[in-house]
Structure formats: C-alpha cells, structure tokens
Image (cartoon, rainbow, N blue to C red; front, side, top):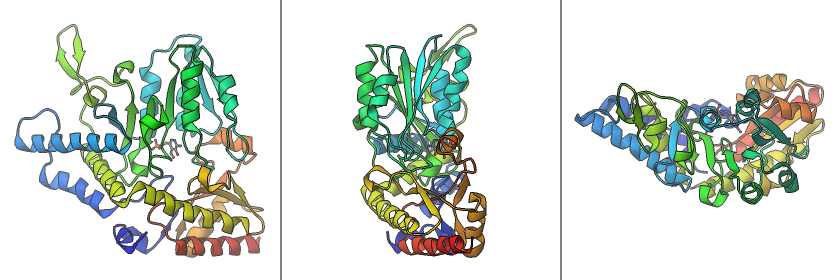
Amino acid sequence: MNERIRADFPILKDIIYMDSAATSLTPEPVLEAVLSYYREYNANVGRGVHRLSQVASQKYQNAHRKVAEFIGAKEGEVIFTKNTTEAINMVAYGLRWTKGDEIVTTLLEHHSNFLPWLRLKEKGVSLKIVKPSKSGIFDISDFEHAIGDRTKLVAVTQVSNVLGTISPIKEMAAICKETGGGNDTLFLVDGAQSVPHIPINVEELGCDFLAFSGHKMLGPTGTGVLWMRDPDGLEPTFFGGGMIETVSRDDYTLTGGYERFEAGTPHISGGIGLGRAVDYLNDVGMERIRVHEERLAKKLIEGLLGIEKVQVYGSTNLSERIGVVSFTVEGLHPHDIALMLDEASDILVRSGHHCCMPLMHYLGLDDGTVRASVYLYNTKEEVDTFLELVEGIAKVV
Ligand SMILES: Cc1ncc(COP(=O)(O)O)c(C=O)c1O
C-alpha cells in the first residue's frame, strides 16, 4: 500500500496501530464527509421539505445504496444500526420464537453472536454449539449433524476475531437449505471481521442475514449494518417516528425499505461517513486490500513462529485466514506484553479474551491472548518492528 493511503491517516505518524479488529482508524475523507454534514447541510432526514433536509435525506439514502452495492445487495435490504451487536440483537428480537425452536451456533463466536441466542433459552429455545478444531477449523459434517428440522436459525461468524480463521459459509448455507426439512432454516452471518477485509457478496454467500460494523471498516464509531434477504420476515425492534405510513388512535401501518427498521432520528453523519468509507475501500480495491493483508499476515505468522517461547494460535494456512493473529509468550500475561509493546515502541495491540470467553476456555487460555490485527494502512516495516520487539520481550522472560 502506498504513501497516499498513509497520508490519509495522520494519527499514524506517532504510532503503529495493530488493533483494527477492535476498531479501524478513520481516513481524512471520511472525517471530511462527517464534518461537511454538520457544516453544510445539518438537518434531519426523511421529514422536512426544506432544502437542507432534502440534501441530508438524499445523502443518507445514497449511503444505504453504496453499502448495499458493496456487499452485492439491493437497496432497501440494508439497514443502519449502531454496530454489529445491535444488528444481531435486532434479528434475535425480530424473529418470532416458539418453544422447541433450535439455534445452531459455534464455540468461535464473539459474545455479540452468542449472548443474544443464549438469552432466548428463557423462551424455551435451545442452543446447539458446534466446536471447531483448536486451530479454528470446522468439520462441515458437524453442521450436517447439528442442523435439523427444528433448527430455526444458524448463526456463525465468517471470520474469528481471535484466530483470524475464515469459516466455510457457502457450505454452511447449502446445509441450511438442504437440512432444514423445508422449515426454512435461516442463516445469519456475523461479518464484523470479514466485510472490512475480504470481498463479500451476499448472493454468493447464500445467507439470510449479514451483520457488520461500520467502525471496523474505516467508518465512524456508532455505525453498523444489518442486511436481510427478506425485510418482511423480520419485525422491527424499535417503534416511533419515521418508520410508519399512517397512525390512527388505534393502529398504525409500517413503511417499507430501511426506514421501517430505523425508528427515530438516525446517526445521520455516521451513515454518510460510512458511505464515504465504502467509497474509500472501493477506490483502493477490496482484492488489493486482501492481498496486502495476506502478505502482512504471512510475515507476522512466520516471524512469530520463529521466536522461542511464542505460541501462535489459529491456522497457518493463509488462504483460510486474515491478518488477525493471536499469540502468547510463555511466562508473560498478555496484558503485560501489550503494555510493553506500547511503552517501548508505540505499538498498539489488543490483549485479553477478546469477548470470546467460551472459546478461550476451550483453548485453555484463561488469561487470553495478545492479538495483532492489520489493515490496509499497515506496512511490512511496521511488522518488522513489531517482531523485533516481541523477540526482545520473549528473550528477557
Ligand atoms: C466477530 C465479531 N462479532 C461481533 C463484534 C461486535 O462488534 P461491535 O462491538 O461493533 O458491535 C465484534 C467486535 O469485535 C467481532 O469481532
């Protein structure tokens, strides 16, 4: 990746940022798009006839269109949320559950794709949890066994935020279609770690819902997305202004499109910023980003594997993983390593359980891991500096 991209992230002049899996940095053009909303056409959307409201509404709608196109979806199928967590909860609250329904999920999941389903146990819904191998790879036949006539929903992350491994989503989608016994097993994909890093097309994936976070793909914080194949198949979670056609004293009719699911004043500047982030990613090219990150991941993994006392987690096969790399150093707590990297060389990484406690227990890693995650703005030189530091830290233990 070139200097022009680096120049769009002035924050990088003082730091090496390797925590993009938590939240990405925000390029100048996205900041400008957010500011220009406030400076030039600050107004509410969907309601006013005055000129600023018209401009704001148009730009907010355009942002939905851009995001829909980015994932190969149609306009009206994409709704803006505040993050992946809200998007997944909207599915948990918006589907009608009956006692005896089953949900199939996995042990790889982030708490955001686990707790909403665990909570449904109160409604008599049961949870089946498919286990990956210790390096995060699934045996697809485990899904064939787990999914049955009672399975209403399968909810799986496309990329693990701990191990960086990519799950076989298309194969899982096929099983949902074949095995549901004609009962329409719905398939939700948590795309929080995939949509920012690999080209995604919902038609090719074959899922029914895709949830992801705008703030992990160069967009502003407070932005996320829920794509759904059939907007009529989900009840809105929130009710209020902006999502109705008519209201009488006793009744109401809902409007169509994304507005149906976005009651109240939305995060207008955030949505517009997310649309700009999508333009930015398209300009760079998602294929190019994927290749760049694969190179960095290779360097990271090979470098870490060569350091004594360092243990790397997740598959080492680059075609089935992204640049999210978890590791530990024998004898050191992950938080101590993260602090040393920050203090010694301004390298910012994540440490701990990464909101994946069930996975951490399964891996026997109750203190968690250190997680380095890269994005389009990281360089080979930064990875070299990082590896030198980790080697130095591992030597002194
Ligand atoms: C795989 C995965 N799912 C869900 C989430 C939750 O995202 P958010 O905090 O934006 O709701 C994350 C965040 O790290 C994640 O990595």
